[in-house]
Length: 331
Ligand SMILES: Nc1ncnc2c1ncn2[C@@H]1O[C@H](COP(=O)(O)OP(=O)(O)OP(=O)(O)O)[C@@H](O)[C@H]1O
Ligand SMILES: [Mg+2]
Image (cartoon, rainbow, N blue to C red; front, side, top):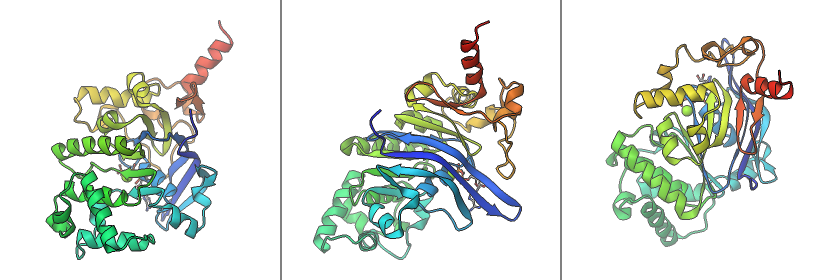
């Protein structure tokens, strides 16, 4: 594989709460291939946004990155200075947070949001230039530019607001687009339109897209690569086709089975018996083992390594150790 656009290595994030530490992202490692769509999937509270907020340096004050790096070329995003980070964000890497629609300022028109964004990131356009760029980006997300620029957020539908956010993110022609749940607040038809739109935008400029979704069906439609998160850990990573057609981790297998069972309208995990682990005191062994139909004694004792299956496939599961061991010592 060519050098990835981003490489997340051993990322570990905790939140300090009254009862102790929430181990929200534990030893997360996966690359984000250049010019491709990577989907981060997992059920609610599995740690998806924590990973994204850590790499975009937008974690809340009670969070602590205990270790890890997020490599962007030779630079580690986690150790850039504030000014280096400011010049990189938006211009190279644009990020639309989860539920960002609520962060649109109700007292400002969309045009004023463009002005604010341009000012905040030291843009060099004059008024006409910025207007041209605003219309260009709104056209990319298929919105009627003039009308939308004059609108206040409350005059736009949820789908239109999400498009405005993506258009704003495209203003500086970033190399990497990070979108946390861009379809979650939308009705099904608007979701389908958003999926088509994201496909088109990605193809136009070959963006590297890192997309978070709890909806594995959306990942299936959009992603070239998938990172499956369970209980704050990466359990499987690989090309989407391979992961969806031949999932290796028992959790991914269960997730996909439940998706088939409910025919694309998922709350996937419900089909897997048991509850997701508390991240306040997660087990020190395999976090999925209490629910895993294939677990054996070792799974309840030891944490599995992240096994590399070939160049572009990773699975955190003891089953692979057992296989390796049995290959090494055939009976
Ligand atoms: N500010 C915080 N303080 C304490 N715990 C937090 C905080 N933010 C998140 N958490 C906890 O960290 C864990 C991971 O949360 P995160 O928001 O990353 O999950 P997620 O996969 O993005 O979920 P969702 O699909 O609901 O957006 C959860 O247990 C959550 O309760
Ligand atoms: Mg989230």
